[in-house]
Image 1 (cartoon, rainbow, N blue to C red):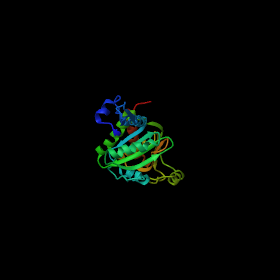
Image 2 (image 1 turned 135 degrees about the vertical axis):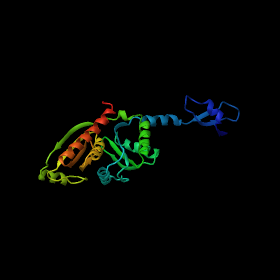
Image 3 (image 1 turned 90 degrees about the vertical axis):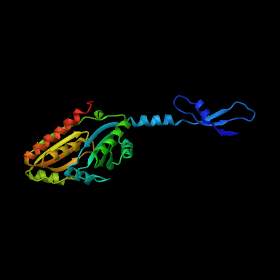
Image 4 (image 1 turned 90 degrees about the horizontal axis):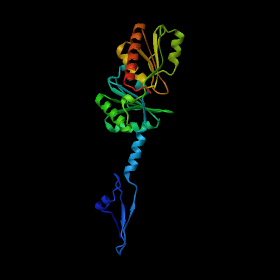
Length: 261
């Protein structure tokens, strides 16, 4: 004596925008019927969307064309697909850290981008996406921003903690830099060195790429994860000065499109 409720009956039991479904039970003597209902999908989906939109966007860095040294460096630390020079790249950092898994899932399902890196830290999570076509990378980024209810302007601004050009590095200094946890090229005694520290960390990537575009320098180290990002590059004094200026212009461009909090 039990049957599934008809479509018309379900329509009559619509509560708000959620459709309440269930099993209709009728006794044999025509008594009053009752309906055993189950939770609607709509509240669950609403809770899920609200959860996703609580994700905080910290860093959104789009690189139109990875320069050779930066592409090689990122390949040396990448655990996923390796970038090649000329690839477009999107680096995003979100909070809380584990939320990067959800953000990554959204981005990869939105287009044919390749995942090069995904890092879960104590408080933040970061990912790097690559593709030869800039529009493909931008599309995935736009879909993520829409999903979390954010915009590029709402990302955290780049706070420069330290920047400096040190001229004519001494041999002892050069040896210690080269022996540290360095993934890039070595620095030689007598070279000039530009160093930059930013918060959030990911902004050193755009600074490094623009510096390499602008001048003939050697990329020594680029650390884009952690509480602070750190960039070290070296070369002749004039080249380093030019690269430093390009790096700082890139940071200023980021801040012009970011909302200061």
